[in-house]
Amino acid sequence: MTPLWVTMFITSTLPVIQIVIMCSIGALLARKGILHGEARQHLGQLVFYVFVPCLTFTKLASSVDLKNLAVWWPLPVNTALSITAGLLIGWLTAMVIKPPKELKMHVIVATGLGNVGNLPLVIVATFCDEPASLFARELGPRCEQIGIAYVAFSMWVAGFVQYSVAYNLMKLPDMSVAPANSPPHASRNSSRSLKPRGSHRTLGEVSGTLEARAQALASAGIGEFADSKSLKSSRSRSMEEEGGLSTDELEMQPLWQQNGLSSADLASQAELGLQRQAVGHSTSHASRHSSQQLNGISPFLREAAQPWISEGDESEQQLPSRWQTAKQWVVSFWQSFLTIINAPTASALAGLAVGCTAPVKDLLFGPDPPLGFFSESLSIMAGAMIPSMMLVLGSVLHKGPGSAKVPKRVILGILAVRQIIIPMLGTGMVVLAHKWHIFRAPDPLFFMVLLLTHTTPTAINLQTVVTIHQNKEQEMSCILFWQYICSVFTLPGFMSAYLYIVNQTDF
Image (tube, rainbow, N blue to C red):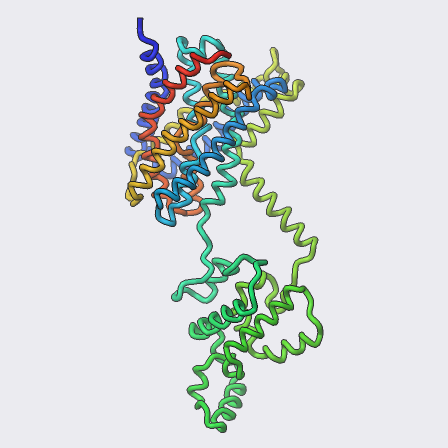
């Protein structure tokens, strides 16, 4: 008789072997030029927009109902806790290994966000395809359908976080001041302020900063020369009569100095205008005084004060009305909502809605459904998800770590935390919560899905996120490559331990 630990190891290794075979085919196709960059992109879009939503909707809608929701709540909660703890541990990891500054956020998200959707779908399907496995014996023919429904019910939380929190964390930091050799408007395009708008600044800070900015912009050639020849000639004659600068010397002076203002005066006047704008109104006397003092230098003043003023009409800065502010908030919220509610997340929510609405569910998945042809069509499309996804993954990883220069301590730190420490902590949390009766697992596969959430390598979707922001794509590819290579050895070990735990647990 085969020992139990050997059976468990073989059972846990089979899903990984199948994943490696499918990924190897994808790598071979990429090496032959068949699954090249453009083809990989198109296939990845099909997986994301068609295959995964079809699979998620059909499996979730056919399995879930209101009674199940009362039992399945640990799945999304477990995913949320895993991501939250992972991001916190990722931050601590970055503090310890001290990665390059530009890779700090990569370390945090690569540690905190695991592949809790795509990879568990493959593993669960493989477990259920093996007739001798514990899960197939317990659940019978419905094993795969229920298992995929478990994974789909938990993965929408991960999708929400990946395209909201991770999306914003991976944005490149704004540069508040343009480089010295950049055009004058670069600082405005990259950032609107040296400090967040609305932060309190003392009078001395604003004056000193504006004075320094005034001198820097003047030396860079912004607003240096007067457009009116009569202004220069009259000004030069008066200066020469006083024994001051010649005409040639005067022409090399900034316009605000030609008008008799020092940089400190300019800073003072700029601050005065900013204070009036902050309160939202100005008296007619202050307006006349401002126009007299700033006559002829308003273009330069706008350049100097640009980081502290809002967008809009340069001739008259006004605070937006309440209606405009509310409209901007609504538009911003809707755009963020569309970014977060992607196709897999929307299909999961639709599946929940259909599954919990009995009349609609009967139309699609009942004993003799009138719209059964529609649900069957979606099921056929869903069958292409697993092989297509593995082909894409193999084609992404076929180049190896690439030419990215990621420090070894960064790679080893992420591997140790993501593949060893987090699975151990997550396993302890799930086992203790079940032992203390915080939740009740309805079957062994439910318990297995909870454990798998903490064990997978970094989410492959992070490569898409960093590509969108053009933020160290090669470095993220290198991190993902070593993560998935390492998971070939860590996943079987942890799944063997999970199978032992499941066998020793009463359900």
